[in-house]
Image 1: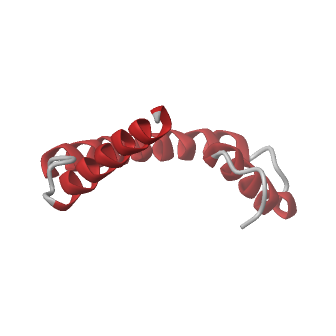
Image 2: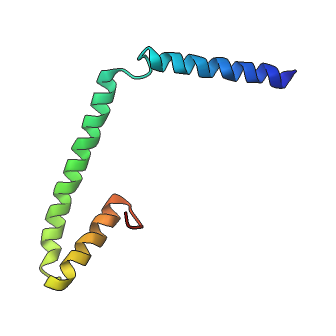
Length: 84
């Protein structure tokens, strides 16, 4: 009996959630644009700082090893541990 009541409550909650999404009430467009703009600004700043750091370090690396250095550096920067 309690399981049925809980199941119906969860189903109602899920239906309400789906309705809000369909009615475009879940997130305001302005909020999404603000969050995405903030993410892009931070990413751009990180890339610019990376360029400066790489420029300072790249002279110490031989030409043959530079590509491997850059690949490893950007993998660490982006938090990737494996290859695509």
